[in-house]
Length: 383
Ligand SMILES: Cc1ncc(COP(=O)(O)O)c(C=O)c1O
Image (cartoon, rainbow, N blue to C red):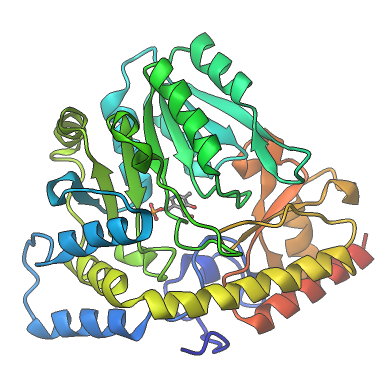
């Protein structure tokens, strides 16, 4: 697999590349510019050749591939009937928020936050409670657990959307942090919806821990959402995995979902099976490639891109860039777009704490990373 291969996505339907004019370098929405593993492409082609695309159950063996992977990677025992499929993670957590919270109850999540977390409670007629992360002595983003519990108590919170690894900061929560989240949620009767969409892209040998794998008490209050979409660049095939081990919770979730959220596209389920079954060697290569992209950005931030800073992400292909010292009052997204034609996410999309930040997607070719660094340098010179 050649991750350096430049593929022009501007002539496709790509959301990432069609948002702005053709001369903009698009480094915003979180999909990568890499071709999916050949095994995934072959599996889709094979299914297409069959020529009939009626309603489908998950293809034979998909459930086993998913549960065996959870066992192999996390030593987590999940039964096949505890696994189901949703057309996306955003759909998955919106169903949970709408189906499991009663009027007057609230939803909590950390900020900065993936923007659909912010929208989910509002679209359900609920309030979102924002627990602010801070940069601690470790030089990394940390959670204020005392504030987290107090906010839960003060606001009658009944559901927590956990993002692990965390978008946009790239934090990977350690076991002790996950245990604290779990203890607080258990103590206060809070359901955990764990968005683990970025769980396959961890750096420096880190290991992902699904919060539900901590033990039965925790898995009983948890809905875990994972997907091949970011990992293998198949987000447009709309197939994600929801693990709900507690049968009562699963029943409540499914009762709400029925008639509203269909099962995923059959091609997506074939792609998921091939990716999870055969994609690991490809994934290892992608990880080294992304890790090198991350190092290149880190070096630039320490040298020519000062005073832009980051807390080096422990996971994800997302860079949460602190541009506060540039002294730009308006939208940084507009600044980079207008001055140097670089397309980034604007910090305030991730909550008010994102003022002064942009998010850059480094899941692209090395050439694009070099170009983005040049563009940012030019943007600094134009200040
Ligand atoms: C944390 C997080 N959750 C969910 C999604 C999107 O999931 P889906 O496309 O499956 O709805 C993203 C995409 O960027 C994400 O970063």
